[in-house]
Image (cartoon, rainbow over all chains, first blue to last red):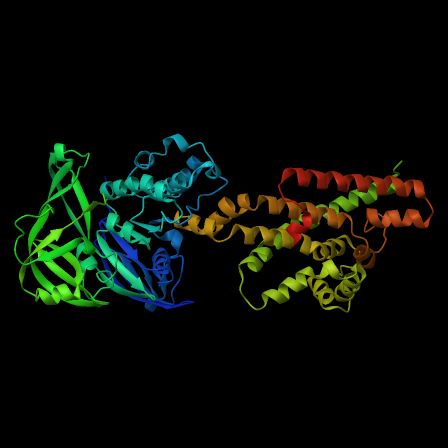
Length: 363
Length: 228
């Protein structure tokens, strides 16, 4: 397996647009999944299109590892068809006049002797589309179409995979069916994925790295766990604010319908998971499910109580306070009332206990 | 029955229409593409110029072509400078006039097909490594096939059916510029209704069959839809 030696993605763009001016200066890791998150009209799709070369911003610089794709100062712009990328569109965008096999072959025929990072068969297997090969796109379901679109993008053997809200057109059930393919992709591919979405759920499920956009600008950018919990970022103050922890399954307690997993922040009891011991798990802990006590409670119905240190406190308005806690090597957010914060006299640096009322497995 | 002169006009007509259709597709495709993709303020002007033959009396178009291509006209001077003489009353003039006259019937179905296709399949093709020319042949052509078929059929049949422009530009020279529609007129003038029937009826059936074929081959509801 040849691997594209791509280290960083450097991107600077300036582009006047309808509702906003896109103005970004990025230095992203060229590995794992970087999610571009923002509301519609925040410029995230435009940014993705600039990276793909589908838009040509008058001022732009783009370098993928060692390969230069755009440098407007030297009047250099590599058109989209000469960029070694895969692009998955929101609406799949398969060629309606070609079968699934024809769509895949379209990409393969244009490889022009390029080093293949993976074979077409691998892509077909990864996305489980072998039974669909003879069909025309019109006869596929929305989820199937997106799987074919991803396989087609991979068949082009790209150095970077760009995905523009690939799940946006799917209903909730289809999303759940589709998600494992995306996660599988992430685990078996060496190439970086840039993934655009406006769904916080997808951020929690897929991101390694998170970039939040608003009004054409980057608000915050960094590793997922850190970016989600930054008090100067917009996400920690959101009602849906959550911390995402990654760990490993260590034991089952079937009689209570529980599983136990080990995280950098400590061990947690989770709802029973039908997975082998040692499986990686990613959980989401809503800030509103976390409460704070000064002493370890002697008797509590809450199973997950972890010692923590307060790092930062911020007023959210409307009587709410957000507290950022360090729990072992993890960061945990707690939304509590302003009154509780005052009564407990919470201060940065204090040692407290975090009670976690509920967790949900995101993958 | 059709006499030798009638057959000659038929042969000439199909030669003019065939050549005009080929030229129309070659000329109309890039023009329709530009019009479908352009956001220029000149688009309206060019669209209107292309559509003029739809609304103008053919004699008006014929008259101006005659003037332009005549010995004193701009085009006429150019063709004389090229050493090919002037175009009016020649086969070449007939073809040029036909191309202009039938242009909207070719450009508009193509333009609509290109607009309907949108940017999306082209962008997909680009991200898969297809260059502009490759995209045209591998994506635009197959996706706009119904548009091309409509354009070719309308361009051809409309050229076969023209009268006013041909008469003005081509005149009525046997074997050279005398086409079917003019021949029918000649027969009627000479009160040869039987001969006129053979040609007119033949043309009627031909046109009907071609349109029937076109309608059956695609889902387009109306031709006006493709002309919109």
